[in-house]
Image (tube, rainbow, N blue to C red; front, side, top):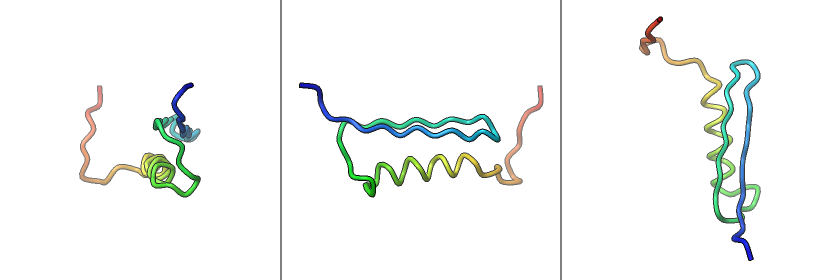
Length: 57
């Protein structure tokens, strides 16, 4: 029998950014795994702070 697992996948169409998370357990919808994965996706949608320097090639 296969071990239970849970996955989260999200996509931000504006920036073309995707985020996938996987765990080998079966959490509930309010478990920290789902909250953390969604929080990470939302954080990826924020612009970087002004202090971040990005090289232009």
